[in-house]
Length: 367
Ligand code: SF4
Image (cartoon, rainbow, N blue to C red; front, side, top):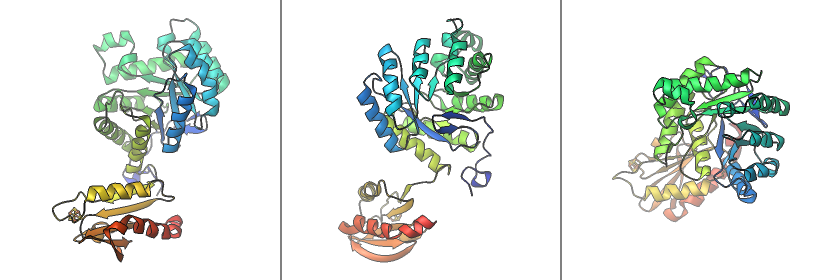
């Protein structure tokens, strides 16, 4: 059936209104999208566009760039025009950069109106400018951007305070009839974050941008995001995701896509089914798996490849793979759809797998 339906073990998707970030729909029935953020100085246009190109190649669908200075704001029009994917300008305190981003053709702006409310009528002007340009605004609340009054009332950062803060920020735009919003309520603790998004999901119909903020380096950050997104997406909550890692952003995209694939929310492109190895292994399973993974990177159609360390359980364990190998005595038994078709020396395993996989093309394409 269709990915994400209850029959696949996931709750029905929460009904949310849809916004468009450039040509990427977010919310409603749109597939959950993957986004990331550049780490370059935005004003360094070449470096930023280079990183955006790498993110695009990795499957990133939307990219956010930080706009802390006037130079960054001035770079936005070239970046927005040349980027292959929609660009969101991330702005914290300076309303004038919000207008610059909108005029530059950015596909959305992330800004918390609470931060700029003190500039009296700026919120209404931003609402009018965004509406005029037809772009949405993301309200992104986290510990660092929590309204001080809420911090005081709740005695610190908690899920309730994050939600209260986000809904208050939304109300500042709603007062000006602007509802083209998406929201995030991020926290470094995945379970606080999960609670916050659950509450938010009940209290509004805006599309939700999932993120565990300051999740840390991999593997800790990876696991935190996978656990939190897994829980929420299985409950039908979440419309776009960003994995935050203290690591190059391409890694955030790879992991984000992998999380969606694991939930069945996206068709898996390449799946490596490799055994963990054990005392029976007759080959270096880790090395062979690395070689196979590298050889199949960018393979033109979805494929499940099995790498088994011994012949004891090889084809049996990998019956559901399209293709695979089980090793023994310096040789590899190559199997296709669970049946051994050839035996080759270890040095020929990778190329034989590739050949046999390519021969499967019409089959796989017809699936
Ligand atoms: Fe062990 Fe063989 Fe299973 Fe790998 S395939 S885990 S080597 S029994």
